Image (cartoon, rainbow, N blue to C red):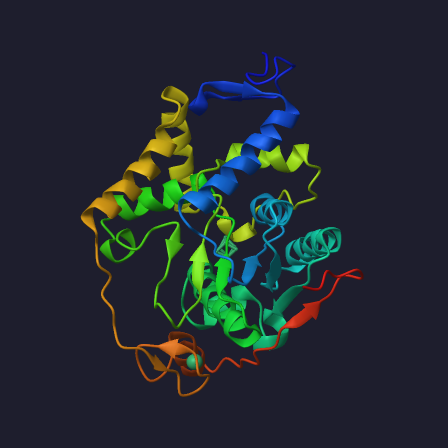
Length: 315
Ligand code: SF4
Ligand code: ZN
């Protein structure tokens, strides 16, 4: 198999693009893809202050690395869910990348701030672990942006994540999610941070190859609570479709975005207030997070530990 660009030995075949590339050209291809996505969809502007949610996995760490390489400065945010050795090892990987990029990051330790890890919290508030985790992560990410002066949350969701989420939302016609599912969500404009997903056109396989070829040290294990998740089943189904007809996932997502644009769907804007407990933007008197944690008597000291690499770059 020869590289389509230089004729050298190809290390990866990209059937969706009817192409195969050598190590050097694949790395350029992927970085270029991220750059073009940012430019085409106007994800970042000059004044934006970026905060990237890093989990220690291949996608978020690679994205942090790529953004830095492309000249977009981003600081990190790691949420320590208190899942024993898994969380400790993830944090180590994040620290290593922070040192390498010389960019600081914040950590929110659930055990310290809320007295319990994610499993115990979810039991207490009677939600599934992933649902509790999603709610807490959303709150904490927005909270750190508001408190520390960032206005954009960057996440490492890739093509497979987005395609499987879209599939799930379509299968069950979850309208409340369907119409706001984009690569850039200005949910409550002017109040909450903008959320962007610059990897939404890069597949999981491409991201894994990129991380390995660039020597990015990431945690291979998945979160133990992801076992049996529906999203993994949808990913498997989509991969079977992709095997049969390469390019299906890209078509699925791009077609959806085009449809959303053409329909020009207006989001319902509701009047925003501020939570009487914590000052967080909300549509009622108390934000969802405060309401639930208060109801089940869970403490919450919102404190962020700051990690500063030795040779930090100051702007
Ligand atoms: Fe949170 Fe783990 Fe569930 Fe992901 S799989 S939402 S990290 S608990
Ligand atoms: Zn609140």
